[in-house]
Length: 339
Ligand SMILES: N=CN[C@@H](CCC(=O)O)C(=O)O
Ligand SMILES: [Mn+2]
Ligand SMILES: [Mn+2]
Image (cartoon, rainbow, N blue to C red; front, side, top):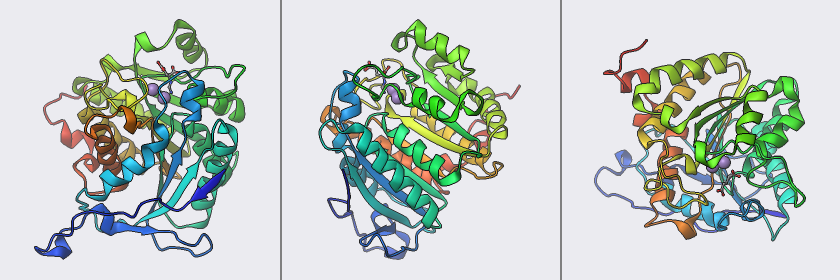
């Protein structure tokens, strides 16, 4: 198991017309070339190159290539928040079926970056949703067991499967997290659940475990005021937020490049509004939103890079404060009457 520097340089357009006002993300990136040399950045990025979790969950492999496709798309997006300096801390690469070792390396990398840098937010990109187990363990390691971590998962799936004989997979991370933190410290909300993609067993488990969830058809613009209130209430019961986004929460035409594309899905506009609300609510949370994540990007199933580009657009919203998705939800929904 290893952690390596980004395999390809960050490249993009260099506009000659007033270049100081023509910044793109590749201009804002600093690569950590020496693990012992601190870099002066505001945000961080770690890639997780892993197919083992999806393979064990009987899905379509290809997520190991996600971080590279993501970097290529983010590099050329215009960056309007030039205060952002994004530190690229490289990729954790899983070899073969060595899932648990790769997750442990990811956890150590996340904990190291969160504990030894001054960044306000770390983005983990890649893998199937088994990434969440590594990321969460890193956050838990960095914050300590007494900190109540609220998990917000935007996903068509609960991912509350009990690990089977072959071990954990992309379908088990939140089951594993509850085992780690204990029932009383498990604060989990799952938004965008597709009824036909989760068995009755999983719905029953979610209900018994007090998981707050919303179905995909309850995630429209008309539902945003209620969703915002729920996010606010959830945030008030925890010390820190961890937002994980499984790209299969989006409709298949917005995110075809995932293992399990959604027929219905939640629109990008609603996902962006939810992100904006989470960022706003996190300001009232003692430890904010230190960790965000984008999973299940599978370039081998993608069409014209649309899923990678969608992931990059979401990253722009997660990491920058001047993207349209950074505006308070209430400003984005002036026509919706609040209850
Ligand atoms: N992370 C993915 N989880 C889903 C995959 C479903 C599928 O492949 O159809 C799950 O295990 O339920
Ligand atoms: Mn998932
Ligand atoms: Mn999913």
